[in-house]
Length: 461
Image (cartoon, rainbow, N blue to C red; front, side, top):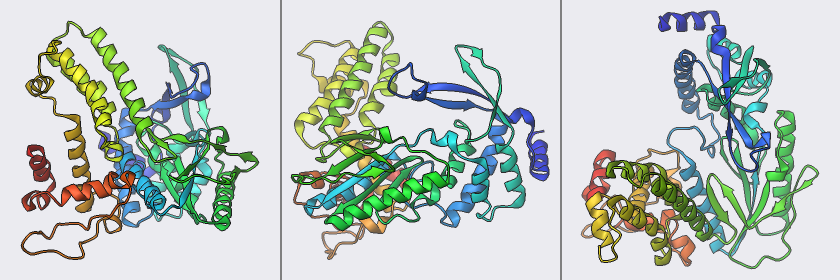
């Protein structure tokens, strides 16, 4: 029956009215819980419509990726890229510049309700240039028009209201439609720009006044683009950060429209605290504190629970916090390594109920199957490097992984990568230099293996 409905929808260019109804659940993000602006709307849409959206999505994304439509530095909602890939590329570029004693001025932009502000008329105008099938275009237009929604809080529903703008958050097509809408934002930008959906950072190496002026001109272009396409920037949440290891003199002031951007030494981008001095100590401290609070809650709640439930809770609620984007910030200092591992040690004693100081924590973790977090971080980095090496990500392999100048037939193998010479620890222990060095030490049967075999082999190392 669904197939019949789907075929009729494509042929007629219309969707059943019930498919265009949504229950909106407000999800708290951060800040004051009493402010409505600190909640994100998630739309609970028709299941049948979502199945249909998946069919449309798979065909549209295949067409767009095949024609290289997307802005290369857009890592949001695309196969092979993620928050982690975005972060490691951004940090590598900034750190590589800092090594040369050149600072990077970065502007982190925040849009005010970006997904909800998309103009349906302007979106259809942009999509009309993509060479999509006429029938698909008619369905997309009908999908956007005449939508209604109500708000659901505590089991109570508001009355339904008409939706006159925006793409549904929580839908399948919504993120893709937004990527199409924002794709040309970097058209007139000479500085570097990176996007993760609407999370945007513009940055430039600053050598002289010309670079400062050029970055300001790019901000003017972005402000103009936003005005033309009816998106607004939340200037109160847009920040200026100067990444450098040198002393800053005469730090410039940048503006967005009439608003002067706030200068900060630390900014949270894609869930990671980035600091002006390129250190991750603040992020690690924050992460450990947050994970520790969650572990304390688990200990209070599951004190008498079975061991299997405790392990599941730890692996589901605590360990992911300690391992988010670790390819970027994996520390080399022993005191930081110990600080992170201390959370797992505490969890292991709770899970096993062995609190005696005479009980070896290493043996406890081994007995309950908890591998060292340091070892897990190393494996995560090598998995990502293998994915980049085998062109399984959206990262440009040739930009970072170059062949060695010389390969010894006796000692080396053809899978070796040119190592990156580093004079500073923040560069030496960043993702690419560190992981390449470790990769080159792996046996040829490991680095030459296909993905599934590679994952198994490094797990056994």
